[in-house]
Length: 353
Ligand code: SF4
Ligand code: SF4
Image 1 (cartoon, rainbow, N blue to C red):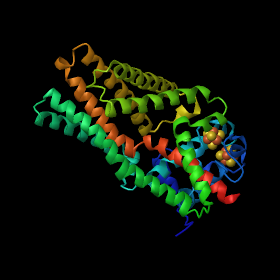
Image 2: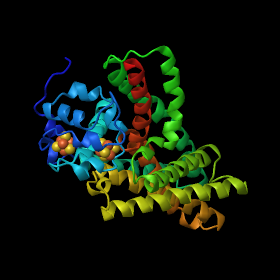
Image 3: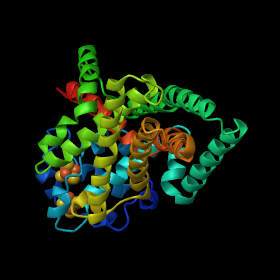
């Protein structure tokens, strides 16, 4: 039923990272006033905090607004009650991720660190078993690894991510009774990829240029590495241009994720002060993926891989854990939901105008 109050909602959010501040807000509205991303009719974070305090889960499921927040921290720094609205928005995004994800595994991994560790270990054992079944034949395992990457992308997108985006659309557009003209659907779709790859709205927040640039380089490096390894067969090719491009993209990924890890450890910004375990898994596995891919290709080029095949096995474990667990059920999906949220909010604006 719509708008039912759930008094236990705060306990759910507690497990997703909103530890102390859920009830400190007294609704002065300062956070909404200072937020440079809030707009007429698209108001946050105060409104979402009100829904959270009242346990209005349906209202929250129908709000794409938490995805418009880039966690600049302005609201948290100026909140007179230290209610930490920036972190509340982050916890709400985790809750929405769990809500959109249809298998229930995102909820399990977000709430139970142990479950994620067990799943990661099981995947590592499966890769070792496959290696054993193939008598650790280098050529056969590398061929298997290349096919596995391709099929992981196809399956994860079609079985997990596409249905989850449809669920997000159902909650934030259909259930929210957004009635936009048909032309705005086309415009929203066309703007989707621009937002996805540039996250251009970040520039509306002050102090975000360096953060935007690092994220942009990581995203470009990650997507480039994906194309070069999966579709251009980086580990098998002898084309020097592709090999060099692979080094550049792999280097971008591990160098800039290392910088992100250092800033998270330094807790030098609001965004970095409260890291959920899934934030760490995301960033560490991204780093490992870029680094191990870079080293595998380097070992091929200097003829060291044959005697050090353990390196490729580690790389294969890392990318399988990434593709099978961390992409579909972890923080990677925020990249997807944030991009679609901008389009769904554009529909909402069109319906209100
Ligand atoms: S979170 Fe803080 S700034 Fe925002 S309405 Fe509540 S008390 Fe005011
Ligand atoms: S963290 Fe920044 S973008 Fe997010 S709600 Fe607060 S002021 Fe707005």
